[in-house]
Length: 551
Image 1 (cartoon, rainbow, N blue to C red):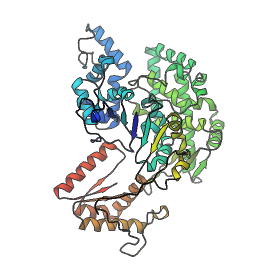
Image 2 (cartoon, one colour):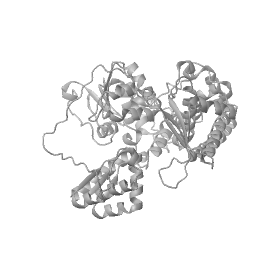
Image 3 (cartoon, rainbow, N blue to C red):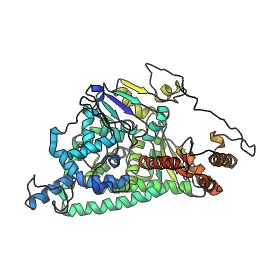
Image 4 (spheres, helix red, strand yellow):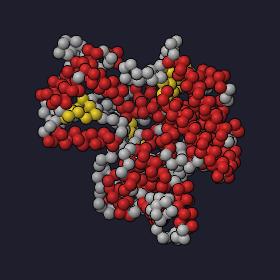
């Protein structure tokens, strides 16, 4: 089995459909690509939702086990049998379920796919023709496919990987394409950034949870009592790590086997006690940010051990329960049957932060806690931020090296090639570098060292904030766009650098000058938005209007 991990999972055609009965080249190969619900959903109402969070919430509200159980009871009370429909809100007593997920579940073991190479469009088309959900169908077919294509995070982010790729065979061949930034992806997977506004959102989330717990205690106290008994048995026995694909909950964070097999500490087993526990953590983080943003504040860097010691001393919390914060929150959200987990993103970040700090507080520092009085890239804006920064990129990828025998890291710009084994702490079996070649003279490099005012220009980190450099780069782009027909692509070294440059250009009036000659499109971290921007960029170039794409 080959798992192909491109840096970004694009919703356009990556793999073309092959109509041969025996699959790719007549060999009976099944090749699939997996993406988010937003890119794979075929439910008409859910597809009309505007963003990923809304799509996920709508899907979970119709496919979660508790939603299906409510629909079954409503159908039973209304006198309908199991085969009497039940796919709409009217059939289920105002409890709507997804007809495609229902069809997928009803088919059971018959949900098999013919061999072939399926892109996202083909998966949606084939799933819709069978009345099966393409998203859950693909997640089930992962174990039977020969080739899989999905995003880096499906392998590297432990919270996602444990839900998607945990059952892949150890003989699978893992290929990371465009892997020149794989060390950054590994670091981001285990880093947590919490802004002051996120702590306010976390406080509101805790208030909602407290109200919901009080409501459940009054109407269905046995549900909370059952959760309490499960937590006594430990995380593994409770099934937090092996939840079904349609279960509403968060995946377990990185925890040692000793923690997973232990009972959850008694002081956070009851829901109301855990909410009070999380309130103390949130208030402590708020106090730390207020100190940093105050008149005597400034940037502070601490080791996890020092930060944890100060937190324990100030709040009187114990270190051990902090390791369970993320998984305990997941259990509570599942017990309360919360459909829209994105409403609790800020709170989950706080729980993730607490779990990672306590888990990696001992030994040589692999993380750093950085508190800044202003984490905003907008000049003059006040936005205190606390960041748990991972310092060791090998932490996220080490489980893959241990689990899989063949891992391939490749990119057109993997240079210097001997640096990556040091960053990711592995010993390569084979290391090869190939010269780039082109079949036609289509590339004409031009290196500019000075602007029109003869001031030096550079993308060096030390020079990025120089207003002269920012202005000269903008003036160059305006001159190029006024003389080059059709399309121009301007590439930046990072998203944060691009955002700061665009903000400065807007203040200088450079963006206004650009729009006089071409339409301006900007790449974002959202795959769907970027795909739409690229499509409109091509249309503008084809129509003769011209466009510039900032990437």
